[in-house]
Length: 433
Image (cartoon, rainbow, N blue to C red; front, side, top):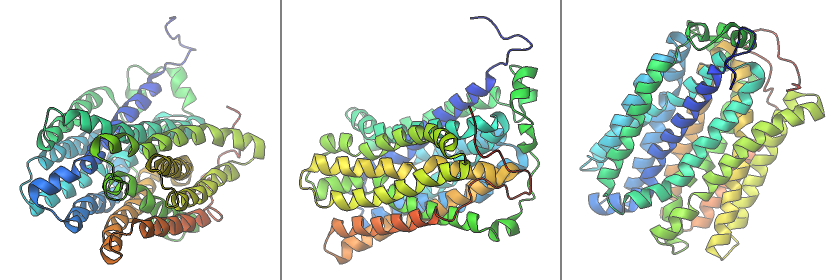
């Protein structure tokens, strides 16, 4: 292959996407593995279903609480040092999950694990605003979320395979080592400013079109402007609603398949990965579709609203449909399609954070992810309470989630996903790339 010349752009920015993809996979492997291990954990540590719901929720609660501080740190100090530290932190507490001996120690480990993982996606989003030209960012988000979802989709099979020769405690130790390796390699390769990287030439810098203005030193986040923006509030609400339903797939779904559908671990390991597998396809599909819709409609605003709104409506319909299907495999296909439809809103939401947030993209995406994970934490607890008061009626859980999906869909009627909050010039309404 001919090496790049002074007029031929280098491709260092593509390695940034590779780092984002691999970290997204590690993130979801580390968080999804506990749902597959839940039955063994409950048996060995004597947890009730309500106690296990707190183990699920405390991770999500910590993840939500630390989203804004983690995004702010990335805006203020740059994502390189922040990401390295948080990845090492959550990897340690992934391993430490396997050392837990009672409910209190498990809750502490999962809380601190969630606090570490909170820094992942706001800082990866920040990196995209620095290292990628505007017309490549939503596509990169789609690729990253495809990888994240597929990491989670194949984790049940991975955990099942690992636990044929390791117990759940040893499995968490193994998974914890993955992030440490990533953090070391990333820290030595990455730079907060592309111009400081020896693999970036002038032609590639020109492609970035001044994106370095979004780099470090923007800690003075305009929270008042955020709080006075209707679009920001609606972005928060739609992500809360979306994550309320989505977190079921990575927490209670294996338990549902065992109790309501009578499936054992070997069979449920494959089926429980379907929502994340289909969701990954949706992230990639919609990431490409948005560019096509923008050309067809002449508006990026409409191109982001349409798949997000329709996706959440279809997700609600698929959850309701699954409750009327007797065959376990067909029901899981319907739930898998709900996962696909759910994730049709992902590129639109995260793309809006990059464009609306601008140089404050880390803080805005962190705040949106905070609200989403609060929805996930609430959802995990609500499911346990519904089961308690309805004598294990899983159908009610699905109907509640469907109703909340519809609220999220309604938000997209009014969100402006393109106009920057910092007063800078709005991006073109469509891209020809």
